Length: 364
Image 1 (cartoon, helix red, strand yellow):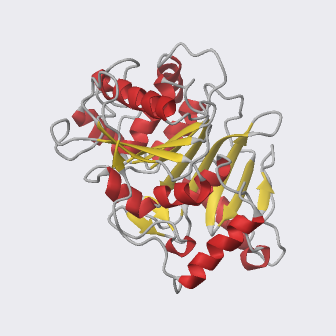
Image 2 (cartoon, rainbow, N blue to C red):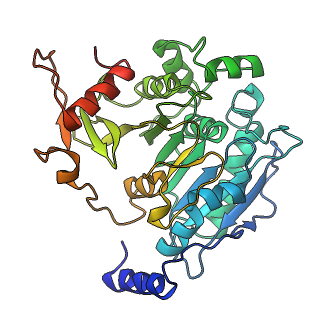
């Protein structure tokens, strides 16, 4: 957690710049060689100046048609790392592997532990962790679209490596095994049932320890990777977390719906951010000072980068919601009842929550 003096200094720099923050430019360096690299990937890193030993590491996977630097520029992860002292690793796809620079999240040869792109990402993580004295208990991963699906591949095949993962407009692990199947699943066609998805996840590794917490982000108007895929991811991860089928908590955060599946002792194990009115892309809020609008980097007034980083303990956590702006009663959270309610339809935040649950098929 940053000290008060650090925060004051940062605000002073902001005022001195006339409110201009995070000028464009490539902040990433080439990682150099990393293991055998069986998947033929490239790797970029951001290591903040003066980063302390045993700092955390965030692995960030770009989407199709993007590069490490363009996704970094849009999401703001390196700028956040500079301000809060953690390392960022950006695996980068090549045109020779995929003409659209998509990670091959659907290819069995790239999604099996110890093989292809999954093995390459594991090797680059190990290289960064060794070279920069990373705290191996604080390694996290996130990604958008094909990068989100590949983040799920890594969480499924190397769960012992990660403390948490955030999947943005992604897909369930092993939901597809070919390019035609990949396009079908993206549109919501032929998705495996929950039992099959859960079996696929369990068979991704021989892991016997605790599994990483999962955050799923999805736009309600995404026509590229339809919202049904987010629910498939949640169904899949319920296999390894002691949670119920339905969320135990729903709240509105920055105008969007957050559903939470908690452990019996109250820890957040699975969360789902449903971003109202958003298409295909990563939710950003340039007002935060982190990230800029670009193709597939969508200004919807919520910064997924900041919220994800807070949930992982990388930056200070504090209450941002303005209760009076959300509902006249000041109510911001709803504990879901265990039995159906016959109460009339409500207004304000309750109606927003109920609409989101109905759209997700979690409420009639």
